[in-house]
Image (cartoon, rainbow, N blue to C red; front, side, top):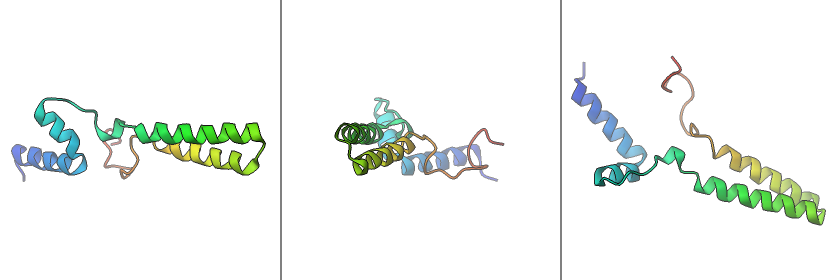
Length: 95
């Protein structure tokens, strides 16, 4: 059975593998939000999608409206903090 220190070391290595920038920031003493909560690209794509949707409505072009809706919907999926993780028993709090 692994000791407490071995489990902590494994957890540290997994975190370093998942988000090395977060680990470097914490080691340097300047905290940075974890990758799950950085949503810069999501906001950018949502703005592009809504701009396309608004332009499509103003111009009256159906293809532009549809493209705006699709891009906005895809951007909304980027706001999910659990994306890319397996759903089920591996998520804390689901037991």
